[in-house]
Length: 171
Image (cartoon, rainbow, N blue to C red):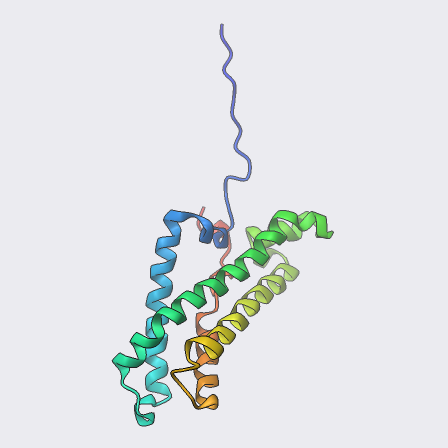
């Protein structure tokens, strides 16, 4: 009788934020980010009454959406890389397995994991703010206070809050 080799699959379940790196999911992520960024730009236009500053919604949207979307996705990747490095090399940084496991799979099982993930979200939000303030809206909105408010609003609303979702909810 011939014996079959058995194959074992370890670590087949990845954290939800890790999906940013997979090509099929990246298209869905890009589309979702584009829709959310579009809605936030339109809401900001209305809330901050940009029409009173001489802006046209169509022009404002067309001149800002691709920059806001692209820089926002880049900022999300920066935050995800932080979590990826901690998940992959956490033991080299002296992090206990329980913490790296919580970062990757169930943030709410460890208080420090929640803090680390919120820190990663904050890093992404800071980059979203800086990219939008310094690049996306620099030539579009000259008034610094208004540009600050819009960039800050976009950073807070579009930060990668999904990093907090436990992977176990999806598997």
